[in-house]
Length: 339
Image (cartoon, rainbow, N blue to C red; front, top):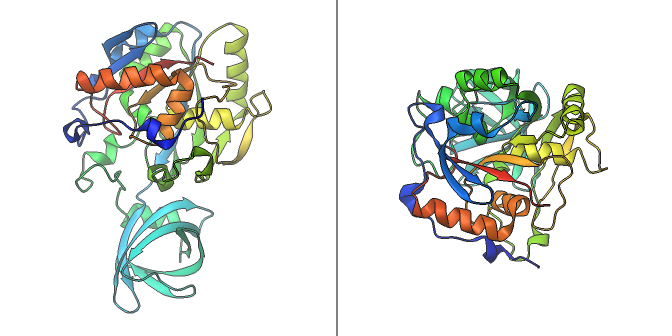
């Protein structure tokens, strides 16, 4: 079947979009999508995994990617870093009444100057006077998703970050991992569940809407990923033992699948623009922990490819009826691969 953008639309009451995290990470709900739909608590994940199963986490760390400042003309601007290239260079979205010109200088946080480079589609290249990550950490603000209708507060400094985050570079959290706390991780370890990590730096482009009704015309934004050799070995060991390989979040899944296009997971780093829609054959991942995604989003298309289009329509209808919380600070699902 050929799907179009309209096939991935659904009605979502605004009150179901989670605006704040719950008091405790594991208090979120979990919809188990198996032969039946089962309403659970996220802490139940320890009972749904077996000894030897492999959880693959994305250990990226969210940076304070939003900066405010002014052009030389005095016009106010907002900068959202999309991706850091090296110690002093990045690309960013810039919101201003008039786009800045290449070669011009902008003043950020009333503290330092940044030079504008050439434009790349919706992004501008920027050259910073010092280490980008350090300047962002000192002067930047946490970039909450556009559907969270408030400014980032103190609680977000920790809760919009996984407990295992360690590699700075993401401008959006790998949100499926937000449900894990250290106590749950310890319980899983005691049960014999194995852990591995990948790194995929989530870009602001993850929130870019799909505008083309014909899905093949949509252009995915590029994201940088890294697969350690230890993760390849862990996957091979789990597969040889007949155990499940569970991606914690669509970012972990995209990294693993991007590095498996030759039908074997390969260690290393690269950029991925992989666009997974129904009909895709998954090569590495056979279970997925994920949050509930936006209507008409590439992530909804991905989970529909993973668990089946009709199954996802049923699961999302159930979630709306049962008033699950949606998006970044919302509840989660556990899916089984059907391909």
